[in-house]
Image (tube, rainbow, N blue to C red):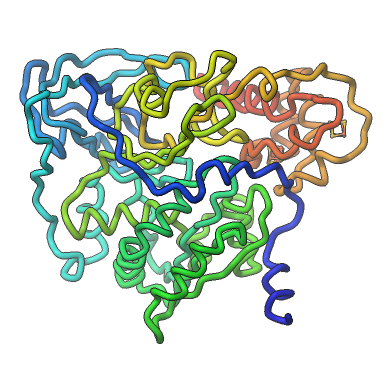
Length: 445
Ligand code: SF4
Ligand code: SF4
């Protein structure tokens, strides 16, 4: 009993407890989505500079072949998810409603779609700098949400020594279960990726943080970790946003990462479990990042599923494969319900950050009437970053951006815990998000 009580204390301050809705897909084995006829690959699927095309319209491309190269250090490659022909390079729909420069590929219906790739140099023989550069070719980005090209985190400042590698298996967003399935179905790939990163970074220990609602993942990892390895599985309380990097570090190590510092400055590197498994695929087989694990779920989905989807597949095709969405579907979200983005058109493609495609009906999307703030303080209690969301919302409405900056609006990670907890239905995070975007454009201008 003592062990259990210790486990249940593993968490961070504040946060919320939205309904999980994970049982719709948590136990479903992953299926592979069949190839479709047309793919759209935006060049800006990651933070940093968009990738630069290295193909031209009409060119034949093979599955796994590089079609765009990194344009800067914070940028990564893009590879073809199918064998076929480049049909166009131009502006195409992006999931959030904007348009972005993209490579359009028509699949060859007679091709075998066999992956014909070369393995990169053995990771064991690479210096850390070479490891970073080889990884940049893989196209892998952080799969936990931010989409920072994966290699960037491992380019350490002079003198930084990494003590802990954290594998983030929290997957705290409701509905999403694809990280869960990776831990259960691709346990060996995850452990191989941990071995690679731990060795390259010289980390003393790896901690795998998993919320207690994934007991099978906790059990299988504990069973597969070889005795004596410096790898620990730590179960965590189920709470949102447990998967946020600063919350995870606080929960696992009781360390607070101060504003303006990166975890690496404190000797900690954290990666999502799916990112780590993708790194193992790259170094083990030469498989670049061309397929995304997606949870397709929500009350509007006929057959909720976890799917391996080739990048660039139109959302419409994914929904069709899952039996379609119901007539009363009002909104399709890419990502989780707390931080995801409504999809403006079902022609938008699956991209590297598409962890979920969720269909919601009128019941879930009904916007309750907004009432004045009653100063109940619930949003303040919910905010894991100890901000004052009600004040930020008031200032955002008044467009008082300088004052917002003074009270640390840029620290807000847009987790939505404040909006979720507000009894007056004030769209706090939406107001903050718009204000942050205005502050950024003002700075650029
Ligand atoms: S203010 Fe930002 S960080 Fe705090 S709860 Fe709201 S969205 Fe999350
Ligand atoms: S939760 Fe809503 S009503 Fe309560 S203090 Fe915050 S903004 Fe005001």
